[in-house]
Length: 336
Ligand code: KG4
Ligand code: ZN
Image (tube, rainbow, N blue to C red):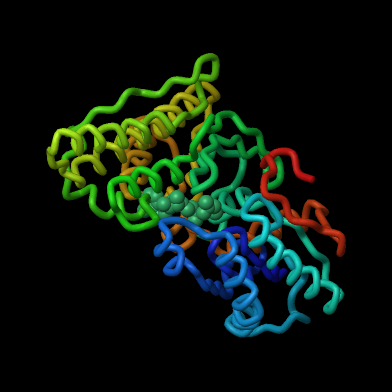
């Protein structure tokens, strides 16, 4: 069964055809990232305009690359939440038009559920498992009970891990996205050069908080500037990255041990981080846990993960009609 997946929640216009939720037949991505770099972050209106320009071509190419037409597609899956509203609306409206014109069912997909599904197209991960989802907008520890049943066990109280890395990278004068830049330069630095306080969330042992760490970086930079001292940016980047990764892995490990999970999955843009991948591997080795990591090309936003999750949502009977709307926020476990 072939599903066409469409994704436009941030700065990637993406479409893909995936067979039976696992086999990627095509995966096309047009990104407006280079343009956003000029502004140090994603500019929503630019993202929306680039989606509007690219979406027809991207979807057409995804069908061509998969050597199929709309006739061969079982259903059209589209990201409808969460994300930038103007960006999401482009994909949602395009998918609605396509579904209406072709008479194919329309399947709404939650973006973060899609990130988790990147592990179905990369490896043979099968629920139930425990998943750490870390992206630009989300940091969750999620119990994935089945393909369509999720329970949030831990969440960030403020910045998402990717957001904190991006903001810290920006204050260090690194190119956007800071998460990628920090990962790139950290091997040149000493990760013990700076120490950061371990953030604790009172009464919620599995929740994260990253804004204090991010503020510490800004304070270190300001203090050095005031004293006219030079800061070794690779040292600061490596130390900050280590503290973020330590927080993520320590909580993931605690939940896995306490709740008896032996299958661990990583997902989201930050799961491309080399330090996070290495630390997750080490932690899982120590306890004999199975670890699933998405292939690097499926860590960031893509259409294949939406088609994959769309397949499982479709099997579970999820459908939308032409009144489908886009939503900037939506919890992974309680869908509209
Ligand atoms: O999942 P994603 O592509 O978009 C959202 O759904 O948010 O995640 C984007 C985030 C950005 O914050 C970016 O800095 C981060 O993923 N990211 C990384 C790496 N690659 C992307 N963070 C750390 N290390 C990386 N290698
Ligand atoms: Zn994403």
